[in-house]
Every structure is written in structure tokens, then in C-alpha cells.
Amino acid sequence: MPTSISKNPQKLTDYARTLARETGFDICRITTAETDPALGENLSAFVDAGHHGTMAWLDETRERRASPKGLWPEVKSVIMLGMNYGPDHDPREDLERKSAGNISVYARNRDYHDVIKGKLKEIGGRFAARSGAEIKVFVDTAPVMEKPLAAKAGLGWQGKHTNLLSREFGSWLFLGSIFTDAELIPDAPEIDHCGSCRACLDACPTNAFPAPYRIDARRCISYLTIEHKGPIAAEFRPLIGNRIYGCDDCLAACPWNKFAVAGHEMKLKARADLAAPPLTELLALDDPAFRSFFSGSPVKRIGRDRFIRNCLIAAGNSGDPALIEHCRRLLGDASPYVRAMAVWALSRLGGLETSRHLLSEETDENVLAELQQAENA
Image (cartoon, rainbow, N blue to C red; front, side):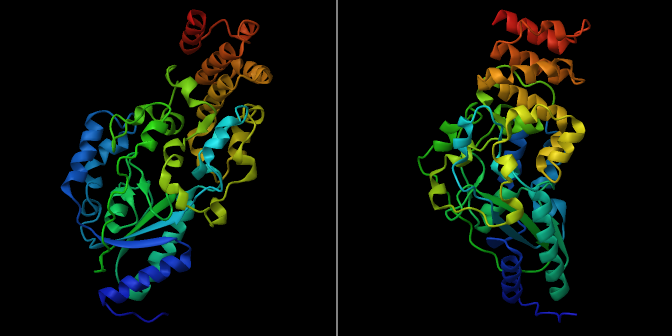
């Protein structure tokens, strides 16, 4: 058994940083558990404005999110950790491959929640064993405001797109946190380095930023393709392009990325078959094939029907007539939302008139609405 180390805050802090390096994190900073009351007020304003869309958990957990002590009253210090997942190229280049699906950089391999949480548990277990302190570990599925905490700890600052930015890693940091009742030495917060730049705001295809440092999730492509269930509003579909899971545009547009380097964690490096998967192959996935292909991937959590909905929107935006037959086969799909998006895609590709006979006589309201819009276009 390892011997207990001193309760000296500096030695404990140094030990936490050592564990972070040994476990593969690229940056480790410390902050206190106290937070600015304005954070809770900003969260409430975001939710009260409806900008959280259907993400009801943000409303349900807003009080606990406002402060680490709301989640665990005994916490004294927060160890904030970041892991670089930078791509090896500008992901916006992949938007030009219109007959292929574009998956957000963070989701092109293993689910980062699993990767990061496993490492946090390793650090937390070793830290607790040596210090005798209590710990709790969190990734972003917990009610923790990780980005403000990361900024307060000095990992970076929240940019005008509301995401964390780093002078060293640009836009590409996965975050994790370890709460502890130990007294540690806090780092200085990072200041805002955005200046007058608005590159991220101007890059958004759907104008999801009503103002700098504010986002309306209901207009965000990441929200629409991942969190939003049911049909996606017609006004957004042409703007989605070939993005079938998430969007990197505001992240990739940031000039601070000129200092970023490609991530080193092999479990997070892009799988070759997820870098630009052909829509012809994705549209053919039934539920078992979808689950098998995306095993271990965050894409799996949205389910096959929502994913195929996204792929059909990408197909409709592709301008590729070779995709008509693949869309036509989905007119008889079990999911009404898939059938509706198949109608939309065929109306865009010019294959709807020759495909109407494949629709059921008891066509549901979603499909009828798409047919009506296609006829009125």
C-alpha cells in the first residue's frame, strides 16, 4: 500500500498534477469550489429564454449546476483537467465531400465520456489512497458547469461561441473534473483573449448566436442533429449540408487554432471509416447494423432512426442523383420521421415523382406535410 502523503496543500496540488501527466491529460489546473453567483443567473436566463430547447435536464438541474457545492456541499477544491483532441486538418474541408457524411471531430472514434471518465477514476483513486481525501469525478453528463470552472481554473476562457478556448490547444479540449474535500492551491483564472474577433459567430451556418457569448441551442446544428428528436424544421435542412452528427464550424473558425496540434490519445483519433463515410453505406444501415457500426461511439446514443434522418438531410443537400435509389428504399421505413425525410431528400434530388407509388395508402401526417411542402416549393 502506498504511504499517505502530507496534508500540505502544495504537496497535494503537485501530486494531482503529476497524476494528470501520468494518466495522459494535457493540462491540469486547480480552482476553489466557490463560484460567481452570476453563473447561476446566466444559466437561468438561458433556460428562461427557451434557448435550451428540449434539453429539459438543464432546467431540472439548474440549481445544482450553479455551484459545485450545490452538487456536493463538502467540496473545497476542484481539479480541472483537459485532454487535447485536435484534428490533423481543418474539419471544414470535409464539408465539401457532399456525398459523404460529416461527423463532428469529437465523435469519430470512442465515446470520450468513457475514455475521460476512466482516466479520472484512475487519478481520483490514486489521489484518495495517498491523501485520505474524499473525491468525486465528473464528465459533462453530470450537472457541473465545466467550462466556467475550467476558465476559473486557468485552462482557458469561454469564447464568444460559449465554448472553452485555450491559447495552447485552441478549441479542442475535452474537460473533466475531480471534486475533493482536500485543500489545494488554486491557479489564477484565464482572461478573455477574443478581443474584437467574431470569426466563430460569423461561421455559424444557422445564426445560432443571438449575441456574443450567448447561444440559442434551437438553431445550433449540433443540437438539431444530436439532441433534437422528431423532424428538423425545413428552414434549417439546407443549412445543415452533410453534417450528420454535430458541427465544428464555430470551433474550427477560431484563429487561436493556429497554435493547436493534433491530439495524441489513440482512442480518440479518427477511425478511417468515420472520417468521411459514404452516404450510400450509411443509408443502408438497419438498427442492428447501426449499433454494430457505431459500437463504442457517441453516435450510437442518438439511435438509428434519428441518425438516418440526418443522413437523408445530407443526401438531399448532396445534389448527387446516385443517392436517389438509396433514399427511395427508405420511403417504406418503419419510422415516420425517416419516411418524411426520404420524401424531402427525393424532392431535392428530383426523384420524388417517380417514387410516389412506393408510399403507403395510409401515409402519416409527417409524410403528407413533406409532400405538401414539396408541391408548394
